[in-house]
Length: 320
Image (cartoon, rainbow, N blue to C red):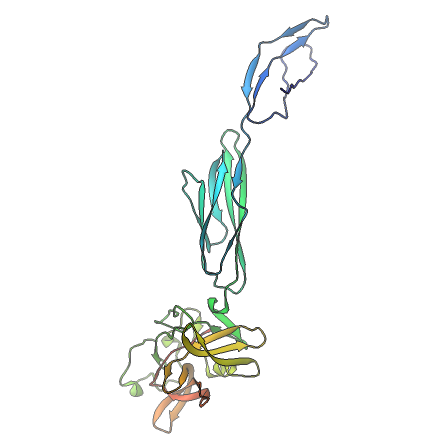
């Protein structure tokens, strides 16, 4: 048993003494005594008290690592305090728990749509109702970087190319290898217009912004931007197969970042044909045409060439 004593001098009346360095969660017995000038000693009645338990807030881990695809994991809390809040400082990292019994905390991380690793911090806050003393602990969340195709766009030869085709107007296709929907030139809808050549769409000076089916923040590329993608000085290209889909891969020589354009049809070779926003003119004084990326894996075509704009092609947009 550890004895603690305080000696103070006073000339009568009331006095107080502060007892420090007590052990948490222990029972103590206390009595006062007074030693007179005559050396006679008087003792008070003995009293007892219990010190408060030590504040405990322990987390089962201080760091959780996640894969780029996004996952759900958890950690546990051991505490004798009242947990007041559990929060994440990033909206891509979400926490859930039972507020009445927050022993188990579930952490859900979204897919990393960037080409850099990222971190978040989860903070567990608690307080001691008896003393109102507050304390907190944190868990560091780490997620590995996403692939180029996981990002919404990739910079290739100075142009921010989307990593996926347009599906329905204003919506990207689910995956880079998905062809998406087909569009007649200068139209924002996917339905086929039979009398297209006589419509206002065919002879427009460019693909008009009001008719652009690209998602917010994107637009149909110009012929110059397609030409920059075909520049073998700064960009390599190769026919390849991605998840069972044949297409063209374009890679920026400086950064190594790439995009994949799925082929649009096969007859008898694989073809990649994608619209630009640039008007070509009237082809052989017969029908209207616009520039399009036209390539095949037999090396018959490789360029940004004029094509009857009545055709229905996919669109790979660029970021504004």
